[in-house]
Picture 1: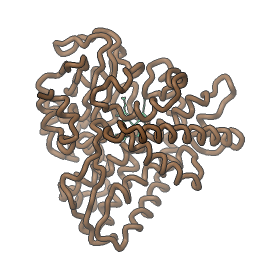
Picture 2: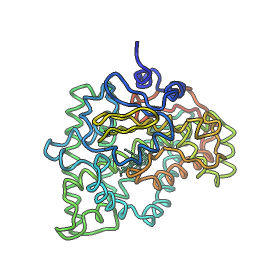
Picture 3: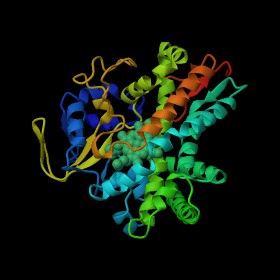
Picture 4: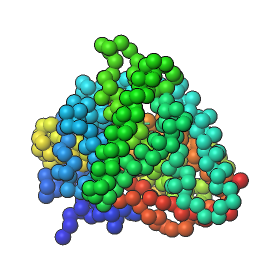
Length: 410
Ligand code: HEM
């Protein structure tokens, strides 16, 4: 008999895990047979995200996680050679003080002006991708739209020359296979992913050298700048650049795809967005609550933590089920209703606390431009499969394809 959390992780329940989350929330902190503690209520997740006794560092090796549901660790940490792995993990897996130093550098490079400056480029890319759909009556929104947009945007921000973008698309596609638990177990795929990581690392190292010789207006130039004493070392630079590529890619693909899926399930909201594009920011916040791309994140308890009548023991892995917190009726009125007019929407879609998503402003801009343009330009879009097929991952959850029938593009 499988436990509730095992059922949540079972790909058979990927299309609709929300009923299982409701069952799980009957108990705020759920200890599992393997010593992991799963947390599904909003107040407790929020508390733990802000608790300094909770660590993102020194997570147990992903193999320890029976459900192999730790995609970003697998993607970024495992392929890196052991000694680098120890000292130069990407900062999503580090605690203070290292975390603050690295994150601070990235936040400065990810300036408001730079992110706002991506608007025009994102609008142009969106227009071009939709133009390519002209003449078609059946499309796969993931392959033809949601997937290519974010990788091109992040390449541009990092400062990858346009002629090399196609290689980044290939790398992102290859690394995405590491997100599929069934493929990840396959040795050939693992070897390929390690090779891919090595290729990206070599590429970024060369690019960094070029940026130091000829600085440009981009994130890699900013991260690589400074004299030897203050400069980010090359290992951290590579880990950070790959983190930005990976953390910002699959997530944004899923936000756009989940967005269209939800709007097609509730066509009155699609029609409203078409007529009133100014509702887009609120609608996107509601999507981040209702169908978030990241369903859970893992942590480690650094001390005994008494919470909600239970004590999470020192050393225990902790799963923060953000997507369940987003549907918690003790925090949100009528939580299973998609309601873009919702007030006080303090969703957990971008996490919270020290590790709150660095790319949130960029993701919001991309999703807004994409969904407004799709709502205006796709004529009579209709879902050809509901539910669509899903990627197997339980943490980064999203459709692997979104087949649509359309009557053309406007
Ligand atoms: C962290 C979600 C887009 C870069 C996070 C976290 C979440 C998240 C939940 C917290 C992780 C944790 O607490 O362990 C999302 C979603 C996105 C998105 C839903 C799109 C809809 C992006 C983009 C970028 C990005 C576009 C950058 C290009 C990062 C980074 C971190 C992070 C660097 C680590 C922050 C830290 O550890 O301090 N994201 N993200 N994300 N995200 Fe995003």
